[in-house]
Image (tube, rainbow, N blue to C red):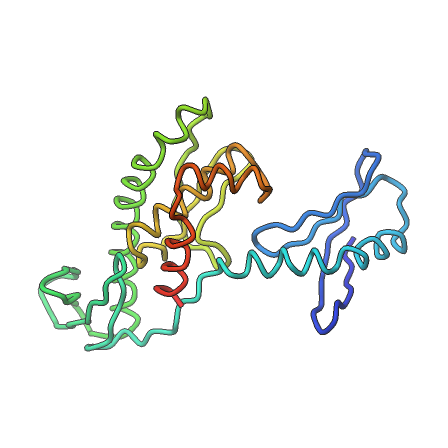
Amino acid sequence: MKGKITYGSTPIQFQVIHMARKTLEIVVHPDSAVVIKAPVGTQYEEIQMRVCKRAGWIKRQLDYFQQFEPRTPPRQYIGGETHLYLGRQYRLKISGGERDNVKLIRGYFQIGVKDTVSPDKVKSLLEAWYKKKATEKFRESFERCWPSFEKLSLAKPRLQIRCMKKRWGSLSKNGTLTLNTDLIRAPKECIDYVVVHELCHLKYHDHSPAFYRLLDRVMPDWKKRKHKLELALV
């Protein structure tokens, strides 16, 4: 069952799941999904009333998660255009060649295109290059950050890399740490921040004071890194 309320000028959509439980719970997920876990038999009117009472809190949670959403500006993939890699800007140099390739040389992305040069072709080559580098650099970041959590007797999560529209990273219930391929554009210290933030969820699944105490202990300068990430990828 789905429902919707309006808080001020903000529409809040939510999904209702009836379960064998005694209390009603409101959960706001990082992807902005609002889920209501209600006891079997709970009337929709009662659920809607509870959502209205907690609307302010729901809005704050949605705003919190929204600040982590990737904000990638549109690109044209033409010569001279700048693209980020590990926090630095590099211009595109595009030329025909005997084979498709991407090289990072002296401040430029030098892209060779075997067949007809087109923005779509350049985009495809550059995205493949980013994905390859993300696999390498994210693994390095993960291994760099993990020792701080290993001593907490936590199970080491599996690392997964893919494109995501809403988040830089996430940690699933089955212990999979997923990082957004697009994060490869950020400085290394910002990538480490996202990794550490998600690894803290191995211990605390919410954003409680205990979660932030752990984050402060593992990465005392996380606020500075978070701010740098927001500035770099605005």
